Image (cartoon, rainbow, N blue to C red):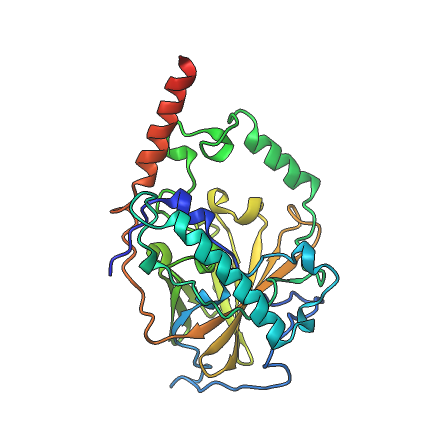
Amino acid sequence: MTRHLLSLAAVTSSLVFAVAVGPLAGQAPAPAPRGTAGKSYAPPKTPWGDPDIQGGYSNKDENGIPFERPGNLSGKQLGEFDDSELAELAASRDANRLEAARGIGGRDTGAGPVHWYEHYGAKNSRAWLVVDPPEGTIPAQTPAAQARLGAAGRGRGAGPLGEGGRADSYTDRSFYDRCITRGLPGSMMPAIYGNAYDITQAPGLVAIRYEMIHETRIIPLDNSPRTGLRAHMGDARGRWEGNTLVVETTNFDSRTAYRNASPKLTLVERFKPLAPGKLEWSVTVNDPDTWVKPWTFAMALTNDPEQALFEYACHEGNYAMRNILSAARAEEARQAK
């Protein structure tokens, strides 16, 4: 089945992010998902001796998890939820998804038929995603970051027609709207569809393919010098720490930098085997020009051999750009009258 991105505005509004992250030096490790604490799992080895974490994975079961700790769970810690409480939270989130699907699916809304959606019945692994700081909230932004936000908004108008209210050109739209990239870690965030990922290993490198927009990262497992060139998904180098794959990525393109990050942004991902067919993906976000301290968020990846990567025919079905720009012209004409 070919999947077309028919209405990015509608689809993007339904994305719910979930991630699991590993700590920088001196930070507390991410709490293990329930049922894994105290257990040690050693994956098989590749023919050349690296831990074998290859395969097709999905994170659709992480859909609906709040990124930060919700206000109604104030005072709670991630490890305090038992299985029944997590199941109750997941059931409530699933009911919200079913209700939202009536508004985003079908011919009239342009977000694709409901049978495309993969996120029903998600078996969430946690109550929220930010695991460090322990209170489950993203640290404050620095004055420099706040100034960048203010500068980005000035001169771009205001209103509902896109970033800053402008839709003068396709260049006013995000790279995701334009079917170019979701960036990093955006390309591995759970969504209503496009939640499949493939990890392939070879001597000296790891490749990760993402179903959403069909990007591929080639990660050398060495200390080769970085080029200094800035890319949409950065410049990655990986290494093994025991059975955990650690990937440090720098040199992000400013146009796709994560959450208003600066050129100093470093992302440290950890792919930790928890059990056969189960990884914890952890990402630590470190940018002293954007946040007052590093922070971490987390999620689970589950092996699913039947969840092959579909063709993501984004450009072929991307009516969003035409509709956004034509709506902007119509709004301008209305205001001129």
